[in-house]
Image (tube, rainbow, N blue to C red; front, side, top):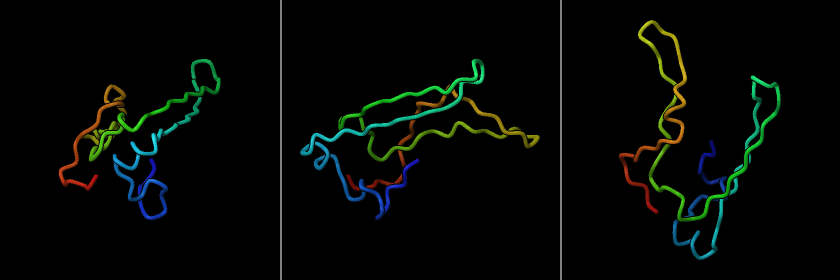
Length: 88
């Protein structure tokens, strides 16, 4: 995750700023595919219209009543609106 604070290049940026600059966010991920023991890579580009303001990703880590943790990746792409409005 990238915290957007005073040290972030996105600090103070809003939809108008991104639109005027025709900004894009580029992501690059790498990880290990355990079934074939190979490093996998993925890249994506997101335009300013793809950004959901005042949202956060839904948590995918859950706890069972007996204290175990598990990951449910079926929620990996889901977001939820934040309760408090943050200025765009």
